[in-house]
Image (cartoon, rainbow, N blue to C red; front, side):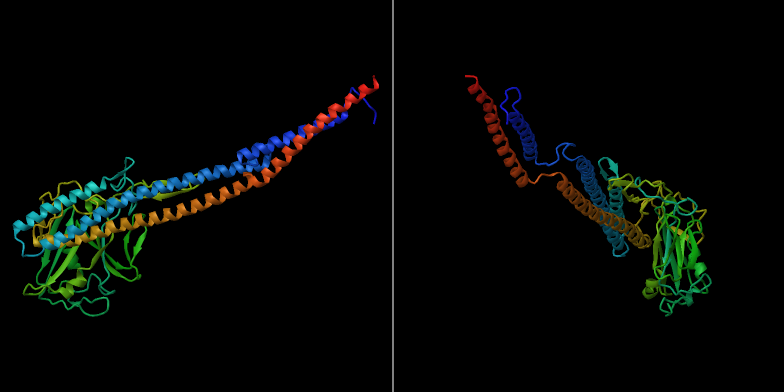
Length: 458
C-alpha cells in the first residue's frame, strides 16, 4: 500500500467505524436508561404506532374501570336509602299489626298513629338521598314509564289462590280454592272489603252474603276507585306497555284501579269473611284475601335513567334507573298531601271512611287491618327496587373484573412491543462500549501511521 499523507484512509475507515459504534452505543444507552426498546418512530415506526394505540386503549379501559367503581358507589348509596326504607316498612307493618289488636284503646291507636306519621315522613327523607348532588330514589331517575295509552300504570291486584274457573257470575258460596276444594262460605256469612286509595281507608260490607256473586264482592269497592279487570292469565300492563301474565300462565281473578297514575292508586285491598256470630273465617280469608299487587301505579315518565359509561367506544354504557321511593308513590299517603276531601257523593251507601288520611291510618281496627296489606305491598315495592339495585351492582362488579383483565392483557401486549429486555440491552451496550473504545484506540494508531512518512524526508 502506498505511503500517502493527504488522505489517511485507515484513519477515515476507523473514524467511520467509530461513529457507527458511538451511534449504536448511544441507542443502547437510551434503551437502557428509558427501559424501552422503542423511544422514537425511527426505532420501529409500525411498532410505535401499534404501541401508542394500545396505550390509548389501556388508559380508556382504566377510566372505564374508574367509572364502574364510581357507579358502584352510587348504587351503594341508593341501596342504603332503600334498605333504610325497608327497615321502616317492617316497623310500620309491626305497628299496624299492633294497632289491629283490640287490647289497645283508641288513645293507644292515636299514639301509634303519631309514630306511623313520623316514620312515613322519614321514608320521604330517605328518598332525598343524594350522590354528588344528584337525587337518586325520588323518582327523578326513573326509567321509561308508558303503561296504557301513555297514561302510566294502574294498581293491579291478582288472586292466584282461587279456582281457575272463577268468574264474575260465580256465587261466593260456590267459590273454590286452586286445588279444587270448596271455601265453604255460607249464605249467612258477612263479607267486608277494605281498601286504601290516596291515603284514605274505605270499607264496605254485604251482610248476609246470600246469593252474592263475585261481581257483588268486587262492587263493594267504589267503582271510581277500582274494579274488575278479568280472569285470564293476563293480569296487567307493565310500565313498558307489555302484558303481565301469571307465573304458571293460568287464569287469575284480577282487580285494578279505575285510573292510572300515583294519584289514583289503590295501595291495598283486603277482603274478610265472618260468620253470623261475628267470628273470623280464617280458612276462607287465607284464600279470599290473597290479592297480591302485581303492577304498581306509576306516573308516565320519559327515560331519565342514569348512564354509566363502561366501554372504550361511544355509547358502550350501562343504564341505571331508580323507581320513586317516596311515601306517596309507595301508597302510604295522599299524592297531594290533602287526604280525603270529605265528599261522600261518590261513595256507595254501604261504604264508609274509617281512616281519613292524608297518611295511612291505624286509628281504628278496620283501618289497621287494611294498613297491614298496604305496608306489605310497599315492602314488596321497596324490595323489588333493592333487588334491581343489587343486580346492577353485581353486573358492575363483573364489568369491573372484565375491564381489569382487558387492561392487563393489552398492557402486556404493549409491553412486549415497546419494553426493553434489560439483560439483552446491557449486553448490547457492553459490546458497543468495547467496540467504541477499540475504535478510538485504533484511530489513534491510524493517525500515527502518517508520521512514518517523515523518515523519508530526513
